[in-house]
Amino acid sequence: MIELLEATKTYHQGRRVVHAVRGVTLRVATGEFVTIMGPSGSGKSTLMHLMGALDTPTSGRAIFHGQDLQTLSDRQRSLLRRERIGFVFQAFNLLPTLTAAENVALPLLLAGLSRSAALERASECLERVNLSHRADHFPDELSGGEMQRVAVARALVADPEAVLCDEPTGNLDTQTSREILALLAKLPEPGKRAVVMVTHDPTAAAYGTRLVRIRDGLIESDEPITCQ
Image (cartoon, rainbow, N blue to C red):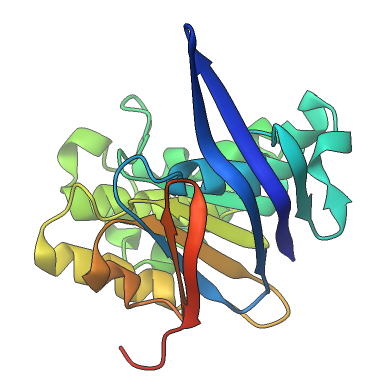
């Protein structure tokens, strides 16, 4: 479903060259919950950006359902992200002037769906994350855990084939983190959806079905998780 083939990513910071990813090959199948773990600066977020068409490799290939992402135009990659990939970030990224329901509906509204249809779908997704009773509340009226549930609902609203999460529990307390991780663990569906989560937390990583460790831009290990 998602593949990186000998992918590299190099950044230039003035005269300094940063090799964030160094020839990584990684495959993620539908139904998997892959956690990517590594220290700060190891390249784990860069890997997620390459898999989610947020960036393109300097060399090698990034493939989504057989489509080489480098052959797509910027607009085509933008449409792919909006329609086929859901994102959950540490900072929630909710618009403060929109209600929870409107934040969830936003990707559908941007795609041209009518407001009533988009809000109906948003309501279904908020119910899925047990937050339908907060649909009309604004982000500053929600707890951190509630805001992240809204972000998860927004990631699901277009019924994506992949959900990519970058440190989704980094701003949450221990109990709320467990609740969000348990929710994410229910999202992978064989033949339909995969979840990839970047984290530095071994407790969070254990919620996945497979653990990829990365260090200095290289995969250090790639093993199934047999118990949680």
